[in-house]
Length: 565
Figure (cartoon, rainbow, N blue to C red):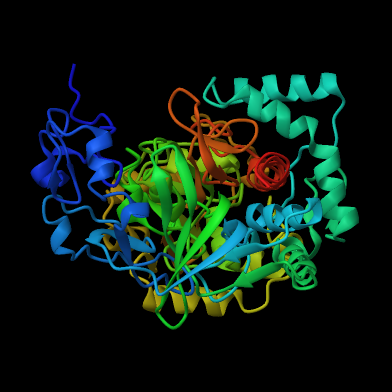
């Protein structure tokens, strides 16, 4: 058995890499190193006693956070102490070092919440409402909300309340949908508590939602921004709740691997503050904007994905790895919808060419490979990733039809206005794309377009000829969705899988406590939201992100107040 990729419990502050990234840790399974310190023959107790754990003085140096939008650029690990193993953490808020400097200030509070999305705000507000006297919420970005700002639905297509029988049935169904990967006890607990938690969100805090027919219920405004504004306004009224932006958590404070005593944060002016707390709640989001780090946790080809949002850098996962939790486990790359490089997630052109049943797609060989009618679903992103490249081809008439009549459909609160309505400025967006985006092309003939995108011209011509008959014998597409490719100019857009976020990584129990691989809790450490595992299989689970964050945040807060304060 090859153990080279197994988690070594002695290397809490590092993790095994594939052979080409592991450096000096190639024999980690035989001994180990932490921050460049050889640990072979050293017990965990003696290592902790040597002062290498945070509480004894080791620190993570703070790094810059992230860019305002799109994918964040990786930061190089430069610490001399990390020379034993170069671990590229990408854009995480910290890098591993042996810095033993003392904090500039120490404060004592009841609870520290890291992250200001749905999980963070639900934890912080619930804690105050349940009786906590002092709660600090840390947000590393200069704005609040994290990926909740992009969230469309509070629960996807799922209902907001369940009977006991319905909760168990829903949990069993969700587990089956994940092919047994998800945790049925977590799912059941979330469904069981849905009525109380959504009442807290909608009734107590006035978060609005809309629903039409059988469509999912969308947040008021089409996304979670208004929800965050209302929760932030409620937090501002609470004397015991302090919300700090541009203040990243840089590490946990530990007395031992099973006991968290607080968190260190870096303030706007560069000072380090140690917050000593009864509990810490990690609500830090996923890894979608830190592909450098994510590459070490997934076998998925990330070059075929587009990461959206900001600040989803895996900070919480790395902090959990400081503890007996060990290496973060089972991350799902949430491929939801498709798009074109450098297009925003709500780009009208992206919606038209990457998410419509009328799309015509070919792969690197110039061949169709699917019925494009599933192009709006979570599954289609995974299908796109099976090809070397995917090109969406549309002719001038197709662009005009979209501009005049809008999209056919869109499973999103962002772009509902595009469905059935004229799209002003669409041709301008097309012209801008083909003149400045190296994955968007325009040509007057099929042969010229094939040359531009590097596919076999004969294959492409044959596929278009068959498609233009209006009958799809190979993939079974409906005739009404087969818009001809006939009128010049022709356009081609390279399609990538839209990585909404990642789900999973931090193992929790039904109290939202972070646990080790035997489900022994890490005292004082909780987690909420998409950084937690147990919700999804290999494909994004509709409605789990916000519902899980709400459930975990409120559950963690209640458990802390009842048991630790």
